[in-house]
Length: 296
Image (cartoon, rainbow, N blue to C red; front, side, top):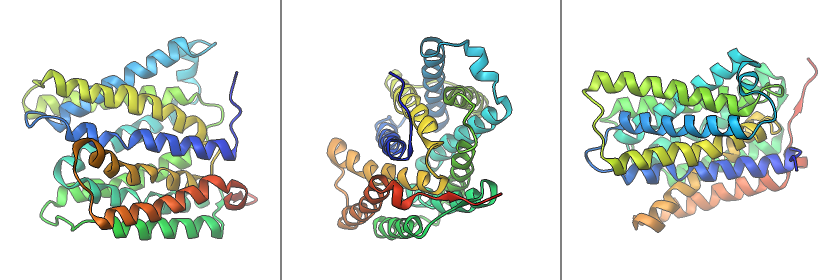
């Protein structure tokens, strides 16, 4: 039976996609010292592409080519943005600690709110602004000491919220486009970036285990999470979509703690609890927190 998306179940599904994304740092940290972030990105993108092609071939009543060509330019732009975010995340997490990367990523609701107001004329009400403020307080509590010596990682991480803000706003203007098409272009563009980087950095030798982890990250975490996010995100205001994705920031340290036995600090636990309160509030009160479009 076809699921009819609305503000309530859309919010829950965006939260679910953030939960899936939260396993990515764990899989990357599991790779060996012989691994390269560029080759991880390459195999991750291969996994994304395989998942997208499978979904297009077996999960659609129409022709896959039609799904790819309807709104082609915006689908390619969305794919480029997601591939850019994936690249920035891997580069950043390879150079600075995960908490710093996620702290910068948490600024996405502000860029989404401003872009949603400018592009879609979406007004962000006081409940959503308050929830974002609470979430930022939680992330600040979670934050670790900045590694100022690695400016590259910090600058690359700072690009993530800007791209995510544009991406979430773009989703709100995508009712006629197939959400799987954007995932397809994410994989294609990511593979291109990984191949070029592999050539420039000296080869494609990667342990099989590391390649399998990267492929799983793309095919399962992003290959499943992205279509859910793309389909549900268009029914949720842009600012709140980014806010719900902060579930990734809360849960990523939890998986590392439970599975890798890396115990989070007390500040991480307290800050994560604060963010979770904001996320649960937004997800369970869509009628109260819903933004309305202003008249054009």
